[in-house]
Length: 230
View 1 (tube, one colour):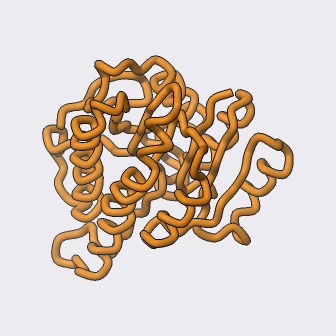
View 2 (view 1 turned 120 degrees about the vertical axis):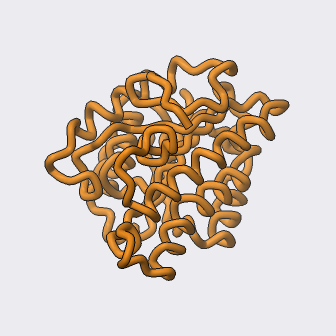
């Protein structure tokens, strides 16, 4: 069976990715910053021998490299760089906080790039060789007609750029790298008024991922398979 690895698997979209890939019979590697507090993820792993969890703070590059070393020899068919944050302290002009802003960039841009670097050989050694970075329509500069959300928009535009570069730099290794907008999802981040459930979002993402070809590498796609402007 193929193997999926998901960062930020303790809640929201990451948790549902963990659940759905596990239920589909995949081998699933989930990472959580705080395993002790990841009760829902641990419940899934306890009920499915194909699902394993690893403690990982994605902003700790030494820890990322250590886990990559522990998983040497493990081929990862689909690596989903999902871990992310939003901070209200760096979204509104006039109330921007530099430290807050930098933290969002660290988690949402730098960490995915470091994770992709660490696990590139694992992905390249697999059959599917797919790398997905969770982006957002809010990071689409061409779609920004509302302003605001400074740190979050910047960070998602940043991961879009990271995935685009990965699609070029890993082309000779046969890796397909895309950025994906999961929709406006009913999570702690998206809020209860969001348009779709985590189940709908992840089911759509999985369909898109399953249908990817090398020609899709470098694209910014939605969970419904539509293309967004950069």
